Length: 199
Image 1 (cartoon, rainbow, N blue to C red):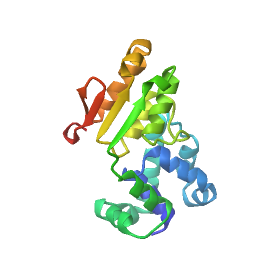
Image 2: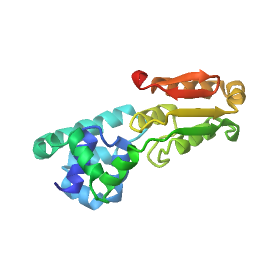
Image 3: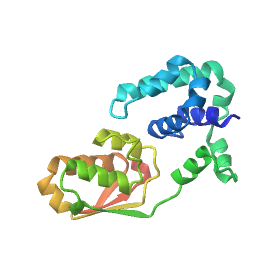
Image 4: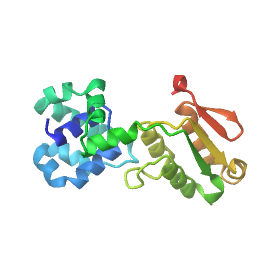
């Protein structure tokens, strides 16, 4: 299967998040401009990670294109196919991304004292979760959307949590909401453990 079609199918099937797919397209604009029809390609150019409607519009157009032009390739993408990619000796974008995505991280520590405001806290969270700053918008919604696509660490430790609860309560609550939504349970005051059954 053509690797560019494969990456597009992996995006449509939910194995590659929108932000990562768009970044890959921008790295290969000549190929994708020739590969996709004008409507599908334009939705990628118009994509904004902070607008959910933009993400939905892009997904719908790319899915339409794949169903019209590459239905067999799209149909061949499933969990077993992805496992084969990860187990192969391939070194292309899809193989590297899928392997990295499925590496299990034991814990991450976020030192909240390093954040002087909400923007710094979001940047710190993006860095610690390994989210690409160029692909992820600067809002809690954008972080929430991209974390959904990543493999969760077993434990998240928030150092100096009390400080931001007092000085940035809105952002502290937003961070706690993101963690809770993705299956983290507060074991102690500042330690969150991932519970697969709640994700």
